[in-house]
Length: 412
Image (cartoon, rainbow, N blue to C red; front, side):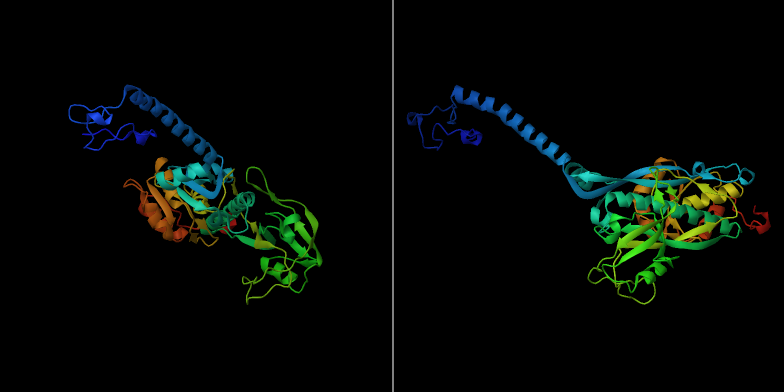
């Protein structure tokens, strides 16, 4: 048995270690012929190890500190909260029924990563999802605009949930087109200097604008460099994520040259724009509800609570026993006609609703596999495409579902 060569610790070997070197060769050997290190060399080797260890620790700590201060263009979705939707919904006292069971809305937390926690979430946390900034924000959206867009989507989801619930209950719900809502603004575009997300354009050079398509039509034929007067409702998103209506103002914008290859495809036959404003428009709708329903969700963004809010409104305005005394969770967008659309972060939401004690979880059909990947046997996941399907399932589970429409004349 031979000792390791001292050069492994950075010191030169004092004696040859070949087997044919005898005692007269200048080294000391033990009873089986192995070389014996001088006492001083052995002591130096013992002393150098603490220094090496301390040096490695310092290097690791410095690297971790640098990584923690280095942002990367990645975000992480982690399980958020699953909370009862009822406290977020206000209806007239005369129509408000006491509730049994709970209907939960659920969300996810979105956080930008640094180089250190990127490694943590990417390789060591199976309950989270790492997503690139390009996939989350899109090619032109910055983080602040992304937050405003999320709150704007929540505002739209509240209106659609109210419309879907009241329509199911037999009320007459109507809406009018009120302009072109600014949902997004391209970086460095003509609009970026004077417009912002949540404003509503109602006219271009005195030409009325009632929809996103009418805005595109009003801009078509104008030229780069031409200055236009936009009549704008100066609405905004406040600090807690609520849409705030504003006064009508005029904004003057100099149009730019359309980016190469830009084509308008959302309004009939594809057309090539003649000038460039640089916004992502949507049709703004003013809703007319026969029952005063208010949904107030502070600091929650995105459209995915639409289905849960719809069920909550139906429950409050009907028997209050929609859940069959169960804890029911739901995620999915909703349209006025009750169509349920897909959402993101369903795996993380499944973890959140289980932690909140839910035993039933409704998810869009395309998200069933994601939910089942995290669901335990105690959580029953149902894939759904529309509100009527959800209500039929709840009825089978013992819930009291309204079957007779509310008479229109009963509406205030």
